[in-house]
Amino acid sequence: MSKFLFSFLLGAILLAAPTSYSAQMQCHGKAQHWRDIAYSTGVMSKYKDVRNCIAWTAYQFDLPEELLYAMLDVERGPVNGKCRTNKNGTQDCGPAQINDVRLSELKEFNLTKSDIKSKPCHNVWAMGYLLRREIERADGKIWRGVGNYHYNYSANPEIHNRYIRKVKSSWRKLNKKIENYCSQ
Image (cartoon, rainbow, N blue to C red; front, side, top):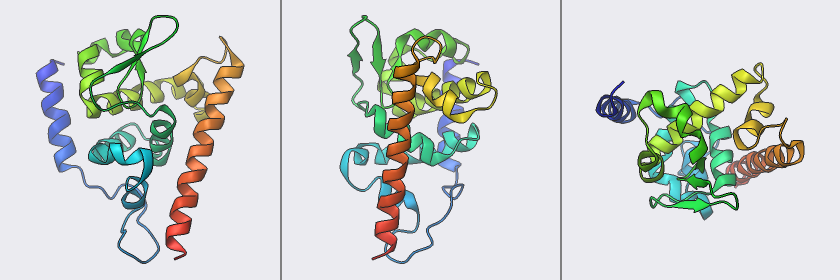
């Protein structure tokens, strides 16, 4: 698929994608959806403009949107087109902190390092794609796939499991934030 065609299709889908794939809120107030709360304050407010990209990616790859939210909360990557350099010389780019060693896995979609670091929706889509692949490689075990997204279990179980704990903690905080809002 050409880079232009991929960008065009992604853009068309994001503009047309309804935001009702996730559960609607069951509480009163100004918020009609948990996204209205999740991206309203704190570190996650910087991802407010890509929340529909996150919703679409979750839908496309059959992943819980809240999981992608939690992973972005843990990764906390920039949306300003910059990468962070690791001790080993590799770079983590964009909101989902896609490591540049994974670019070969995205080659068939003509996604470049420039795309991954400077186009947040492309970065989020790449996260969803890579996460779905890791879950499939882990025989459908979601949490093993989440850990492998960050660091393969066989290479270092401690780093792998620490990442899973961080993502689960972020997901719990999201649920608590929504619960607190709804109990007002």
